Length: 119
Image (tube, rainbow, N blue to C red; front, side, top):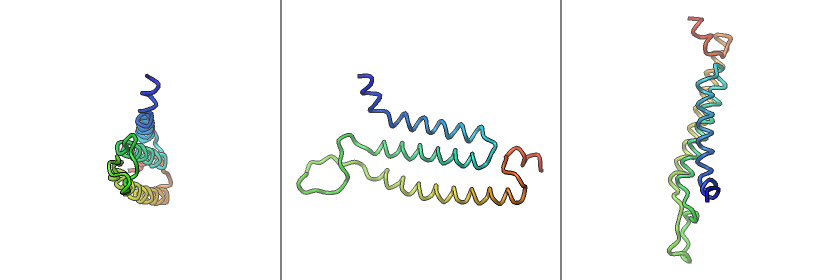
């Protein structure tokens, strides 16, 4: 019973571990590129969590089939919202990396503690 419960909730554990890893990377790494990677890991964990929440055990994709009038459908809204979130996350990542390149050109470093020393 415990193994079955663990396997049923396994995606939640994966989302928690990914979120924790991303938070740890963002808080501990001084390198700005590593911080952007940590933010992307955080985003992936959030996307995974919302998609898991939208899933229904035994549900089918929300495409109407007249042969199955009492079918149990999964919720399509979390998947649609996460698709939008992926696009926004990609654009924010591209913008952050462009800013990091400009900081490197201007300051010659991408380590965040060095910026405070340069004031």
